[in-house]
Length: 250
Length: 279
Image (cartoon, rainbow over all chains, first blue to last red; front, side):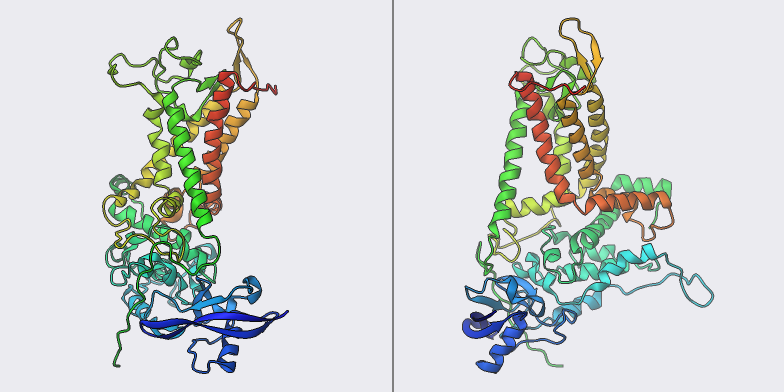
């Protein structure tokens, strides 16, 4: 397969952007990031693109390919209809620095405000804890996150309504779930999740799960279980009463 | 470090996207599927006739709390044996039509309306919030499930408890569907008809949907950080998680089958279908 393909790429800074067409020859096995690099080398040396590992593990090359949030390094050209121009845009949820590069630093600020791990007293004299593998596996899924922020990008609460000040977003719910479900952690994040992190804004459209390149079941395994824990604490009077008499705890 | 505040991209217009796939197709499919079901079940619930045949009782009318006067309506002969509390109460105001289905449909209806899967589906299909992933939506403001009215969705687990009770009732209906009445003598005899199979599949699909519910998954074990300590809880949680992985599939299968079960019994009662006796 060798073919000349048109790529329609966002160029510009801040609010001044336009889609510019570039043509390049593509071959078998190429990914979108290869084509972008080729365009950089051939016709647009000032094209800004963030990338690092080219293996889907660093989460740097997040963008929107034909309108869907994806990692450019993991999107094979063979999966795309190349008879039409291929659109490559930056993530819309974060401020644009230049071309395909956005400022994702807001995410790191949000992460800082999530309560850190507060381990219970060690089980052994050497300061270690005992955990069953099955209990480890549940939060383990969330550790696969590479912080590409595609889930944040696709979430309409941030993308359309810009509720960055009131909503932590799927990435941080995954992080909170990873800590909350850890058997040795004792911190309580439910009040923060209901309040400043705004988990109630999530309306479970599962777009975050759909775009996750690590295939983390964000909605079903992280967000909904957290929502249920929030219900336990704030919206279930009968359950609360039941817990008083049954000493049900986590 | 000095920081420059860069502007965010403006909100896209309704339906605006650079997606090239037919993103509107699943949204339209959900809209048609759910609308069709709501229209059919409302119609079926308001008919108040042809909801039973032999030992079969339509799930739209189960549990039948009261039966109405069989002389006043058609296709109800023998329906009184399904009623838990006898005939229509005498105190029921004559001005209000007595519709037994509407006395009970709020429970399974409430379970589905507050279901996490359906919420995501109908927010997209009916409220266009958003129409699909990465597609512009029509709303400028948004409060989600944080405030009234959608904060009520948190009631889901109470509907789940009711839905579990309904499973036992519908399983009992399968048992009733194994007893056939001889119209000449009135004698009951054991048997299995195609309708029995339809009813059995109905409760099977509904069980797969209900027992994979996110709220159930939480209350039977998900609330614990350490599940491995209690073997029974662990097994229940694992089973529920297994069903939960296909929650969408079971939600649709059970929805369609509930409608079909009512349709099958209705057609048998009206004499359009002839129920096949297997045993």
